[in-house]
Image (cartoon, rainbow over all chains, first blue to last red; front, side, top):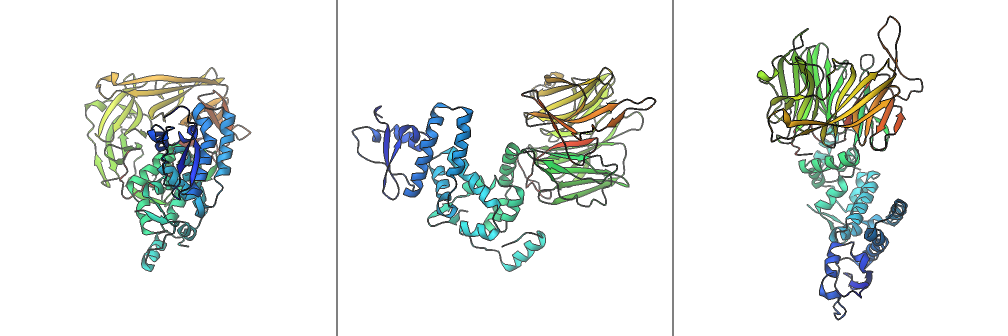
Length: 162
Length: 379
């Protein structure tokens, strides 16, 4: 990789082009490997595709750019506090719309910090949900027969299918 | 078993596990109702183990109860954010008069009540599952509850001793996986050994204080091999003027906490020892103790357990009365707990509710570990 490169261009799965700085891209192992690959040298015009849709990729890159300075240089406690607050704001998003896409993208891009953050956000949301709300956001059908439901109801009085 | 979600997104099982392991047992119990796949996943031993490991790391809690001679057993838990809540009511409490907690491992509690019969209740309060064991009443018995990842089994050991001389007489062990009691061969090792405390289970063994002649030992029972060993103790046992001693775990190693009153109850001295075990050696050099910490405090602090980086102590003012034995009195402000921070040396006072004077404290973690079929692997 040429040392003159400061940002790289990637394609989303929708075919849109995105720029991401080298230091931010280093937060992802697969992107980091790509950086070492010839395709980012100056004389190469092939743009690699990342299997993440545009809407999600914007958020992922936003996260990377915010976290890159700290990841690369280490930071003081006050910076860590500030970053934590930023993470909380960053995760205030529509679950159905994008949270699971972020979760899957973080998994695919091996981004431990974002993955943990997204898992914790999903877990915190689920804590306050009813069974039927959870079925809805996960698009799951209730596959218990009425006999099985009756049996479960007897075993766990107080629990609810709804 | 991927679950379909949103338009083109499938959430693979390992991602579901990453989310689920962060959830409290209460929520997971509800999630079983979502669909059959989730029910199976949540009852899978490897998930139960992963959830346990995560909870033990992220939310190590404490379980405590007050004196049960006067009041029925009431258990409270304090979580890692210092929130206190009451544990659901003890099942079969009508049988369990004067019940106390013998041990707390991987979310399973072992309770003992010794009245008309000797009852043991093995109970996971988080999932409301329990098993009751009954033996003949025996007032000369020391018990201990432990888990071994090698045989993947929980065992309850009862050591009976002879009246007056306190010599070990008989050992019986109950295994959760075989659901049966078994007498254990004593061997020559335990000849002439006296037992002085109830047991503490950790790292695949159960430990009791004991002595033989002038030597003070920890009697250890290895759950997997069903063998005993005598481990030299770094401090004189309870016969000495150490008023209080207790076993706990620190960085996955057995820890020993001792309390000694100095002067005329002017201050107390707490020593904190950690044991290393070199399993390749068979002589007494197999075990070595390191004193990690020593602290003086101007009132009586009875150390209970190590929790996170703190020693949890019972805070008691000792009042000497003329012509009477020592009288324990709770200090007036109700702050009955002192947390001694091992990193910063700071003391933090804390009030545990409904504990009165003496209370018993255990490390605890909420888990899905079943009481009926035990098949958890390693923590």
